[in-house]
Structure formats: C-alpha cells, structure tokens
Image 1 (tube, helix red, strand yellow):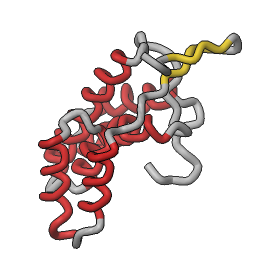
Image 2 (image 1 turned 90 degrees about the vertical axis):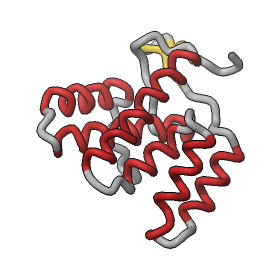
Image 3 (image 1 turned 135 degrees about the vertical axis):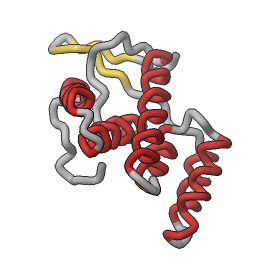
Image 4 (image 1 turned 120 degrees about the horizontal axis):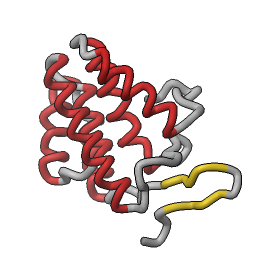
Length: 147
C-alpha cells in the first residue's frame, strides 16, 4: 500500500484511492466519444472487462434505460468502491474527498445511488447515502457541479 491513508493531526484520516487502470480509463474515454445511442453498450463492455472500475459503473448508471437499471449500476459501483476503500486502508470513517480525481468514480456512484433511491421512494437509503456523502467530503456537493 503506497498511499492508503494520510493521517492528519487536525481531523479524521483521509483515504485516496489509487488511480484507475489506464487501459480502462482509455476504453471509457473512447466509449464516451461514441454517439449517445452507442455509448451504453460500449460502457457496459468496459465494465464487463473491468468490473472494479467505479467510474465505468457510474457512467453506466448515468445511462441506465430506466431508474431501476441505473440504481443497480450505481449500487455495484458503490459496493466496488467500498471494497477498494477498505483495501486501501479505510476503516469505516474518515474523508474520501472529491478533490482527488481517483475518488470520483466511487463518489459519483454513491451520489447516483442516492438520487435513484429517492426516485424509487426508498427514502431511508436516500437519506443514508446523502449523509454518507457529506461525512466523506464535508464540501459535498462539488462546487463545479460535475458529479
């Protein structure tokens, strides 16, 4: 573990996920350049080849054909993110900030899960996810609105 946790005397530890696999990121970038009609299938192929790639799951959720499909993709990205956080030293508390590019796939999946949980009327999960986002990054949502 080369960079799992940064301990800070002024507060909780901060976890920064390692950068995504460059090949997966390149495949995703290429998929996003396709026509809107072709993007979903290309992104699905990326995540089938790279099932731990949280940004891919978040993008797949963004292109869900309905709310339930989006919810499922976001949930997979969220759980893959929890696995990655734990593997990188996170112990259930501490910051996972948007300012670190490598954390964004997980945070996007969590935000998408919150949004779709609200859409299907799962209020308790929506509230838990929203609270969790603010615990992970007290500056949530990002001011640039890019999530």
